[in-house]
Amino acid sequence: MKVTSAKELAAAIEAGERHIEVQGTISGSPSITLPEGATLSGGKLIFTAKGVRLTKDNTLRDITIITTDYEVAIYNDTSLPDAGTFHFNNVTTVGQVYIVAEGHLKRVRVEADQVFVRSADVRGRVEQPHGYGVDVLQGGFTLWNRNPDPASLFTATLRGINVGTDETPVRGSGVFVDGYTDREGKLAGGKFMADLIETGTVVTDGGIAQGTPDKISGGVFVLGGAIVERVENNGTVTTHGPNDMVLDLWGRVSAWVAHEAITSTGASGIGFVNFGDMGELEINAPIVTSGLGARGFNVYDGTVRSAKFQSITTHGDGAIGIQVSQPVGAIEVSGDVRTTGAEGLSLVKGVQVPLRAIGISIKPGGEVDRLTIAGAVVTEADNLVSFEVLEGAAVKELSIGSVEAHGAGSVTTKIEGTIPAGVF
Image 1 (cartoon, rainbow, N blue to C red):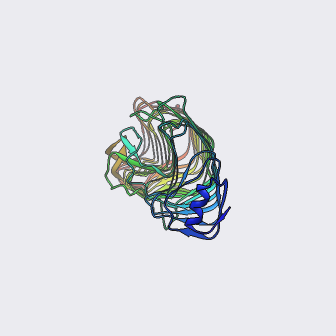
Image 2: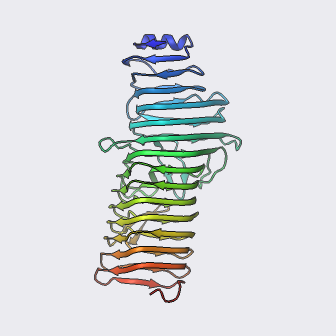
């Protein structure tokens, strides 16, 4: 059925139409709820509060849904036990996409291909997962299993998810997926599982006040209740605000590949930070951060089986290039690891602490099976160490093209832990 007005749209829904095609632009409608099995396609819907509410086995195709930035453009009914599969194909929104399993809802699947959340502001959401001393802002595109029943399952296949623009960065996280977690951010109930999360361009500015110790966001964030086979970033991922991680993992990912630049301009905005179980990580583009304490690559918890980088450059004070404090497998950088900053504050597990912009730091408890830097490890500022392995840390195999320290009072190496003989 084709509809051209809010009145005709309401009548089609009331009649239980299964195929509703919007022609042109419809405004002035209150939030609508699609009947089970219904498809909504074509045209543009403009709301001033909540947008389209899904029920079961709904499809949104070739449609633009606009509401105010702080509202939900697409959301779902949680009164059914099984929502079936929601299909999103060529969907654009202003406002959040928020699909959640909670209450009576225990099973839901999302299959998305080409979704563009042009802008959204989710900073006011009360529900924020917690772990490692911080709360996490929801995303412009949020899929979340909040059902405590371990039998509850939210599954997804996601292609072409784009969030924010340079002119309208999403205020909050970008792509956010999670299951039911405890206060420590660990899976404690219903799972979220995806075989693929593939993103295009992601641009966020979480709007978190600089110096805040206990709140973060992420450009692409796989949280502790999520298990994902593959994440693929086919577009640039950029975060601009304080505490805005670019890529962040608390859950489990078998393979994560980025093909375009990973960039942070805000304070404590880490390029890739790991607290989960990372299989093979491959960043085939530069990681560049410029904010105070904005590090390049961190492993604070969990593990990483292998990580490959093109290059890592940080420009802020306190912005370490690579920091490892857990056992990991292989780390390989085909270019340089370079820092230009000195000492400054950075957010570490919910606390702002002073750090020096060391090039590579292997901390106590950190162990690297194989560390290969084809280029140089370089620091530019004064009173720094370019490469350090502290007491209680180890690197089993080590190859570095060169280590340089250009600042006054800086040194190239500080080796208190274990490294292979004869490297330096």
